[in-house]
Length: 338
Image (cartoon, rainbow, N blue to C red; front, side, top):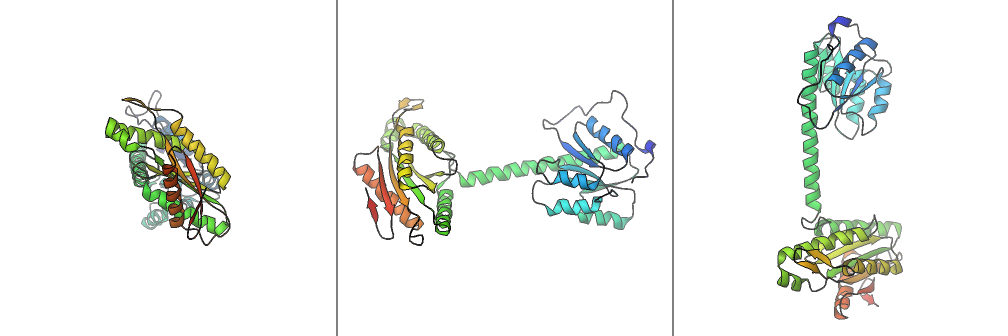
């Protein structure tokens, strides 16, 4: 319970508004304080500073809110609270995965060891009661800058992570990422004795498109082909650019008959409607090598045998006139074609 006099932190004057320069994103703050007057005063100031304010009067309620990833990232905690005190709450916050929380700890004790204890428990900053409202505002702004910087770093990290796993032209999975996914799905098939489908797809006569219209138009065709293929598969399938005009599709748990239906759907999504480009509509067709790995013989099928079988089936599709799909079964030593 806070023993701070009411006059130590005055209410905002009538007509006082938030800072003139506001960020586009409104920040949120969780205030956990058991003194009702002090709690109301702090909340009123944060509202004036254009924060979305959530208020609780004990540590247990604060902890229940903080268990959710969408909880406020700025937290103002009183040291002494019923249920769970501020120091213990700091420890719990730091023990959880998820978005970083900026914690400002309020204490009526300015003992240096207590301050060290609070910081070591995970508090980012502290204020000793009684304190000036301008000091609280300054600490809040410092916390907001840190949270903004952290958000920018996370965004940059996510962007780099996306770029490292996705093809820069088509934005679908790149070769390295799709191969890693294939390795994982082959292992999953082995563990659970499930079926697995792999499709190698190739745009027909793509070199002629580049030679006729130029590489920029060829890039536009590749981008649209990748988009269409990605939109035509199930949500738990994987589509990646294997290289050049070749695409690799991984279909977990797919039987041979269903895989053929999927291949025809992929062929149709490319060939049924011309691709619009700045040079005009361009008709494009797709050849596909389809490989079905049955649930049995789980220790036989490898990534290499699947890719070899898909490539061999794709070659057959090309030899038989293109714009078609050929089915194969992955075995240890051979490809059983249709």
